Image 1 (cartoon, rainbow, N blue to C red):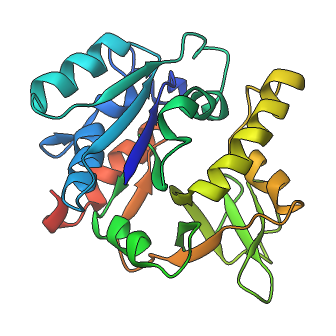
Image 2: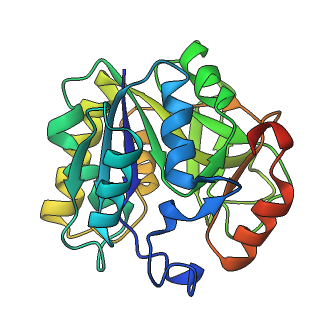
Length: 244
């Protein structure tokens, strides 16, 4: 199994913390977010890792090569990181993942318990994502399911009342779904110019073609997405001792 970590963004909402470093190299406790992400993959037997970089890419590459000198990480550079969103970074990973049996996809700004990866690996679904069931607001990527537990809506704008929880930003994706996904991404990015949106929009478009994700409840495990300075301070205060 291969993992793709998306780490291209500027993270302007985390300034001034990100004035001189990418978001993924911010430290929570004694480890950076990126180090925690990689460690979480390694402990679950995933040592083939692709990182899509952008903002201050040299810092990310130097950090990974210094911290993990024996880990053959593949770096892909998103040259237009300042004007695109994570959908474009995912598009750039196509040559590295399209032939894989399955992958783990995750954003680099997630502080998460590594047991969440194991939960997805062991889930009975070919295509699934980590779900946190909690009180929802406007900012979260929310998930709505049908009677078959298939995700029928996944976005920030879907109904809070109907949503069952938040998509954390960690997915297990099969080869069959990847094939359909990259066909959709080509249509969206090459033909429609939709390179500055969240990749979840591609997930929503694929629902209409019969391709579904299933939620896997990981609410028992700690996770946080760090978007703002307030999130960063909150993470420092909330991180469980066993993850410090």
